[in-house]
Amino acid sequence: MVKALNALSIEIKGAVFVFYDGCDTGSATGSALRWCRMGGSDMFQGMASQSVTSLATGLGLTLLAIGISAGSANAACPEKPLAIGVFGPLTGPSADFGTMAMNSVKLAVADYEKQQGACKIEIKPFDSQGAAAQAPALAQRAVRDASVVAIIGPQFSGEAKAAMPILNAGGIPSVTAVATNPSLTKQGWTYFHRTSGNDANEGPADARYIVTELKAKKAAVVDNSTEYGKGISDFVRSTLKKDNVDVPVSESLDINAPDYSATVNKLKAAGVEAVYCGCYYAEAGRLLTQMRNAGVKATLVGPSGLYDHRFLATVGKKNAEGTVASTQAVAPGHFKGSDAFEAQYKAFTKSEPLPYAPETFDAANAVLKAIAAGNTDRKSINEWLSNSADFQGVSGRIKFDKDGTVPGGTTSFFVVKGGAFHFQTSFDDSNL
Image 1: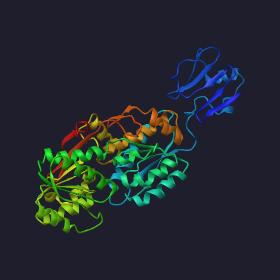
Image 2: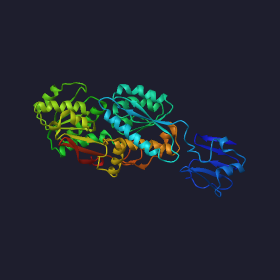
Image 3: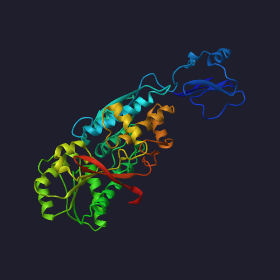
């Protein structure tokens, strides 16, 4: 009797032999013969080696009749390419994050395709423009596309919150590196994974930087009213309060407003020494320019949304001097293997790796490793990610816990000097 176990293997019962994909479960015993594929090579376990073709002939079987041919590509791979979606701001004001994600995924896929027996991979863009309002429609499109077996993203917390209920219900495994709001892992989404730390660590670290490095006694905290910006700023507010820092100005900004003079006037009147802006580069740039024009000399501090070369171009070299940006991503040039990864990234993309490029590369590799292990549908890929993923990635160990997060974490800080961001220090999240 011939029984299809799944899309990846075929079993022929009755003490004849069994076809497997992978040779890592030990040799067959007794009259059962084990055919398996390891590294693209065909072999038998449980008897002296014979060619697949000659054994089949001796048993009166035709390999083509059961969908296997000697020397064929990985039997686990479907004929059509498997699609991996990149979900994030591929265009619009935050396109740098989307471009970084697309480049990182392309690099990971290029590495994977060098392996013998690799499945065909297609990368499909899902451009949110960084707008949470566009995320549900994109998620629905991904779910309807049967070729999409996994998503790298969604990139931002707001779009992740809007898209994940749909992606989770549709059974699409999603691995993000940039959506850092801690509430995302508390929604019961079994198809959500994250390869970076979260704002529950970065926010307190940012506050501790204001206290220990800037030694500020009076600080302001503003945010851009987004899921990401307000979320991380609330952690800064609560930590500064615990550290007895006076916060005379605490408010939310309109992310699209051109004029922040009302807030700037409050900052000037209060005489704050530091201003924390839970913002992206665009609104942070407008705020800082207006602060400097009004004579406010307080140091601007912000999270990873501020760590963007376009911020520097927006505010100019003089105004940017001394600005501090943090990130939960590993610091470029300051992690194990950084030189090799950054050289590979630059050669492949012709660009510098932004923060979260290593984490996004690892996110893509997690999905690709699942596929390489013989999982080619959404459910089996997700099960592998949740239960079997455990490897040393570029950014650190990739092993997802029950909430879909990875262990450990570090918050790195960069200070603008001479018109460029320079790494200054990092805080281990376990010490916060």
